[in-house]
Length: 323
Ligand SMILES: O=C(O)CCC(=O)C(=O)O
Ligand SMILES: [Fe+2]
Image (cartoon, rainbow, N blue to C red):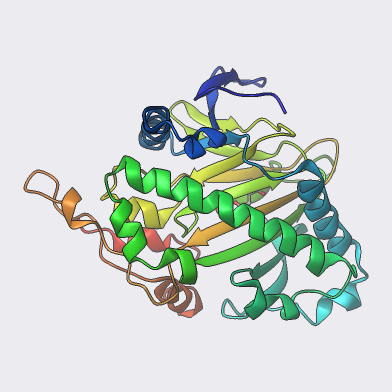
């Protein structure tokens, strides 16, 4: 794998001239503390300025990533009857399959969502078809969680909050939710090619593995396509880090545009603090000139909100802002 040193900037191939920073994750393991602290600072800077970056040298083998995408793709190719027993609109179901329509066009996106950590608690509930789904997805889930933990530690460290992460019991009890997305091809649909409406994730961070281009992020100059790179993973900041950091690192608004040439599979690995843990702004980041901007909340509160009559498709984070 090509070595990427520090936060190398790679140029964006499409319509706009914005760039995507690439962080060499292996440098976080560096025994040289000075080198490590340089990478931590770079991660802090991209979180503050953009809210997204790509990671290279993450240590997840190409075969493991390909197998996970094959497993997801194999699941979506199953006959409808195979998937019907997992179909549900209940946000509390630990394994949930559903189809989404956009602007009245049916089944633009189909989606399978399930918890993944700890595997012993969840894997027996995952799909049994394709027959190697559980094995392949579990291997990827375990590896991507390690990457998430390293990345999150660096993000907390960049805010001088590393001890806060440790005290949140993230290592043992943190939630990992995997979302497998299957988007139709773009042409032929009478919509402006949107596969998933703009939103932020209620995560600390989300890590995305994708078969081809389609994800767009809200950058400083508007929507920007995230380039598809076989070797890197895309990372973005979610609502929980925005709350913890008192808005210093903003949750990234993103959406998906249908790919014109092919259907697209993506796997979002969503990493959050434990289910019942009330996430509140770190006291160290609050002072007279930076008053607390968010009310505390837990993942469980999010599920209550999504299941309540109050929910009309709006953002949960917006309900937590203190004006
Ligand atoms: O398909 C993607 O790249 C992103 C999916 C997404 O935003 C999500 O699962 O929350
Ligand atoms: Fe998302």
